[in-house]
Length: 256
Image 1 (tube, rainbow, N blue to C red):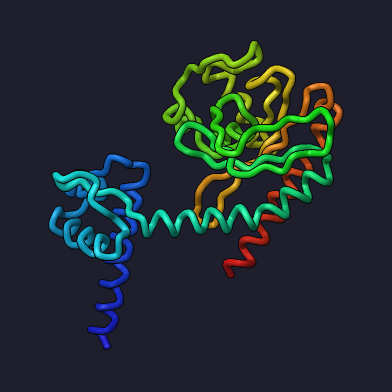
Image 2 (cartoon, one colour):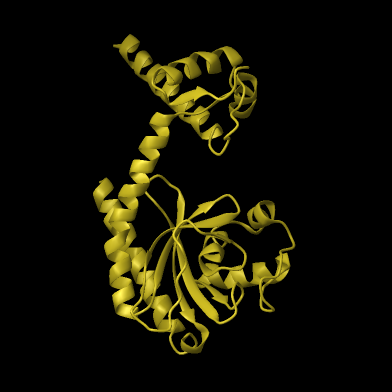
């Protein structure tokens, strides 16, 4: 009985350690040595070597260089891509409904370090509309979806991620940390962040941030030509928040 409980705890511990090692390799395209991994996850090198060997057998990690570095392997990348694809498919009806309600374009993006990557888009029916290419990248500090993500971080976390000064994109871009933090304070309070011609002249936007089933940060945004935005921003913000709540409820019920 006691031996069975001990074995269960040991197996859970190994899984937890393997997950920690996989997280340490995230975004490390050049790979890490066993010593570097051991230092990052605070485990003995021999323990790391044993777990990495098991992960290599399942192709969850592979050799990155001839001298012993390893990186995430095709199996885990395929699993992650499958979950991402499933999330996009799950989110799509919510984006379509929001676009139909607002008659505007709706974007879905994910956060990669200090920038956004657009992963899906529903184009609005208006003749005057805004369109960004899926796969295109944008900064965090001057976009509604980027600021929605930053608002989820602490002030210190924002500074650590993007620094204290930023390149101006337009005359409206917030190029210093303190004004940006003041703007993020409002976003934290209301749950919605705004881009008021800060990235592109002639375009404003509202955005909300949330997490996908893997815990990755994603954001939904509605870009609008400036001439339409002032009279519609309150409704856009309300519908964005409602869409976020509906998506979170759907994902929670699916996971239950």
